[in-house]
Image 1 (cartoon, rainbow over the protein chains, first blue to last red):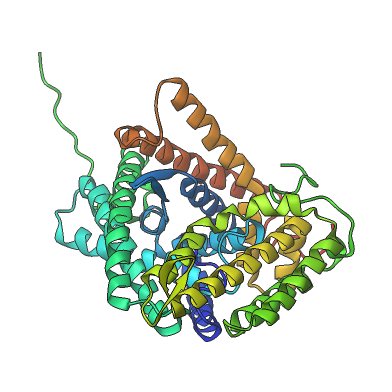
Image 2 (image 1 turned 135 degrees about the vertical axis):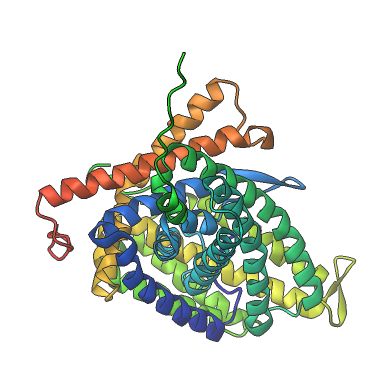
Length: 229
Length: 227
């Protein structure tokens, strides 16, 4: 999934690097609001969780498998700013210690997997949370919808980058169609896993799910009269 | 994960490449790869030169190629794309081994494969010769924000703990007849991932409290000093 060295030309890689650095700088300030002084250990452990979740592959068809990107999942679970930080750290560690994703493509990978999937996943999630009735049961489907859209949009942004700084004369409409088709299938897998994971966390510890906090605040304690027998 | 264990890709050694400061290695890798990426795609002699430079560094590091080459499999998905390139590109056609392929596509595919392979091999060399703790200190010297370095440090420190926890969960699932790859068992798999998230989050809270009780004030005391 990770873009290697040489896929996009140097100017495009540098430009995405600047975008990524700016986004991480903004996230650093905002994540302190989400996690206060717990940021370092909490984001570190959540990053480890995202890394572990990415190790699980699911079949996409035709013998290939995709793996979870986790942008929408992390955004709903710990909030968008912390999610951008966690995914960026995961991508840097993967590039420097695991040779997964090129070092010149770190900016591109952070922009695509860190920023675009988190922004789209969280945006769709917040929109649905506003529209749908304020119940805890809508958190998981809304997260799944965010995940479903986040993957094809990331693929689309990648195609856009490829159109600007791609190193190959590929027919762009065909590439766009292939990328969209393929990543819609991956998006369905991502949506299913994201929805199910969020549902299980909401069932066990709804207070941990960042995206569910406004709904929890609206819940009132009900005291029901015991049935006399 | 105790000190000195290194990580999966690390190859223990005492060569000049191992001993070189991590921030210089990261800068060298970044600069080298920027030059490689910016090299015109048909300058094969220049690519050969870059490959010789890289192989020279690997020889200096005394990390055997038999150790690095099998680990290049991470590149496979994009290698497939590079191999497909001559068939899906447009432009004038040419014959290779009796198959009609696009000429600019062939050039682009080869360049992609060469640049990608040099990149993966160079990154593997950095990973094989650098301890995670040295890398963190190197990134700190490169003025990476302190908070990012701290987050990365916690991620590296707990990587094996959390992945081992996931491994134990997977073993438990499999021993009860679950096939984690089958979509039929996704609900079970997702519940395990949910449990893993809760455990990781709560571990983070415990780590934070333990740090507070030892006087954590937002910066790690040992981060700036030598080991």
